Image (tube, rainbow, N blue to C red):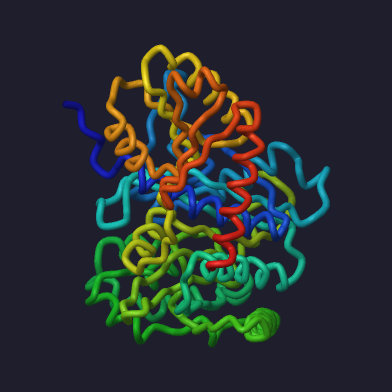
Length: 432
């Protein structure tokens, strides 16, 4: 038997339906904010991620799947979406033919070579948005609110927004100097990753997860003390707007996110369950000032966010946040004998073309066995016919929930089904 590769998994049956539910809701929310779908390649030039994500980021340093193709080109599997979305905007010159901002959403797989653990895989799925051509802080607030509202619609109630500002170029320059001064006498006792980050991007040290290093980091200078007046004012404006939208937040001075292109506001959505279990970050994002220019476009700013679908599904399972997602079959067709299979085939095709989900029993089963098959398929109605029904040009339609059954003329089948399903929908809305 050939098994799936380490760090990957099959998403099938109920799990696949849950993923689709999450993705469909997130897409609907994005469309409410007038975002348009982008689908970029899974493989890209390695240079895109080195330049875009940053060679100091752990993703680029340790986690990318990179290889030489048959043309001797250095190719990487996509580890994150933002760089590819920006490349697409630049390649297609969307900045020249579209009003700003350019608003993109995406859904699909990414690949990172990291240690597999609960809810984290080497192939994982993401949903996210990018808003490019940002000209004021209200776009940052809009993106943050989109993510917050999407989580609320998925059923998350105890959401805490963690937020920080990395400031503008002046702020970051002064802060890097302060961090260098603080860590230079301590870096030898810190982990190898931090030693590498010290030389490549010192802000990455703040994201270290090694307990002994965290203790050192607690006493490091805070970015809030180095924000320029403009950066400080913009951050205050963002926080005020979030308060106006009744979005709770907590300022986290050590929040830098894991990607080198972030500048200005960065944020994460933290979640605590009804049982007071803290799940950590469900997703996050931030503002970027230089990414479009770095990838070859004009000097445009942007802001974006991303959610891991696996992460959301895992937490929603734990907290019972999924509604009844069992896929219901509208009609299960039950012909009495094999000689009626041809008629069953034609009826099923007709009903599917009119929007009904239909399955047919083409197996030689007894009556009770066919009903069990209908039950396993979660069917709402059984459509039954045999010799008498064929002669009288009728069908027996049985409601599998109430066990009520009626006889319908074959030329009135669609009309009666439409009537019954409309009635069922009305009852469902009334009960809810």
